[in-house]
Length: 237
Image 1: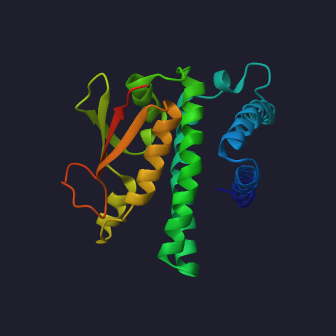
Image 2 (image 1 turned 120 degrees about the vertical axis):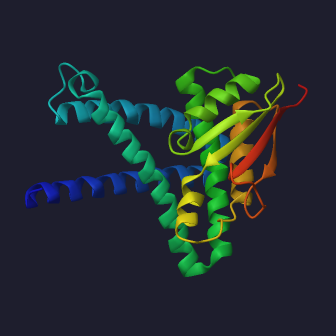
């Protein structure tokens, strides 16, 4: 890669960093001042507009304004770019946790982590409902579709089991975070509090009748074939 291209790539990554930070600050402060529901309503409107704006700008920047970016670039390139950003999202979560842990300790990092998941999980659920056209009270079928559409749905390996009309078990069979720690000889990261916040909020946003129960999640002991497991039950209306 030439020095010019290296500089341009560094510039592009820097722009993504600042765009993400500024967007996230708007969302965080909206939650603080308006409450989560109102902030997520605002994010739905702002985010839809931003997606359309960014798509148009990228098409023009890449010279694809006439035929469209999707038709002018090989599908594999777009798929690889999307996956790179998904793994980047996971890396961002990790480096933030480590930075806060280093400066303020594990308890502070976990508190912030849990708060972030309390806000991000409902946002993910709303985006999945909108993208997939899921009904407001879609029960177990809607939950299955939405879980598969999550960021983690394209990053980790997972499975459904013990499914009935009113219940479902979701198991993470290969978690990138825990697998990476295992390779480094580290114990499991104790993510139960964050996971409980995450899955409870996600399920409630998909259908308020859904309840979440943790079957097992670190620091709980668990078998080798899954890292965490969650049971979702559809309560009576």
